[in-house]
Structure formats: C-alpha cells, structure tokens
Length: 140
Image (cartoon, rainbow, N blue to C red; front, side):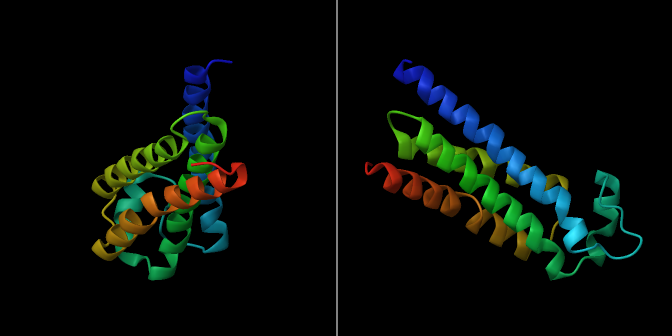
C-alpha cells in the first residue's frame, strides 16, 4: 500500500473512530450523570433551554467525550500513517477543535466550560495520543 494512501486511511480512520468514541460517551453520559428533571438532552432545543439548569458535574461527560475521542483519533492516525505521523495526529486535534468551537456557538455553554474544553480537550489530548503511538513504534 502506498504511503499517501496509508496516510489518508490513517487520518480518515482517526476521524471516524474518534467521532464514534466521542458520540458513544456523549450517548451514555446521561445514564451515568442524569440531567435535571425536565431537561431534554436529546434535542438541540432541549439542550438550549436546559443549559441554565445544569451543574458543573453535567459537563464531565462532554469533556471526557471530547478528550477521549480526540485522543483515540490522534492515536489511530499516528499508528496507521507512514510519514508525518505526529503532524497527522495533531491535525485530528485541530479538526476536533473546530467541531468543538462550532458546538460552543450552537449550544450556549458556560464560558468556563468552553475555555476548559477548547483549551484542554483537543490539542493536548491529540498530543498525548500522538506521543503514545510514536512511543509504541519508537519513532517521531
């Protein structure tokens, strides 16, 4: 398999699997930390209306989803790609960060969560995923 094709497959696999991890954690979040009574977390309108009723503990699962989804995607991209492995992993982090910033504009989250999430969940976890993958294969 050619280098370019393997790099493309690495990035696409990172995006798809990372997104699946993200969505999986988001979907199980309300069963682990139930939303306040009357808050509908299944629709965008329900989220917007119920944001003022959420406490800080309700933001744990979204943060974990963003961080672990990014970590998984970056790790996979770096493991599968042949060249520029670290850079592809960081690209995954920036793509997920762009999605996170988009969500901040679509869903009115508290400023503190937006800053913590966008500052700590994406690029740092992409970096960690890349470093772990590269350590496993002994190359930068």
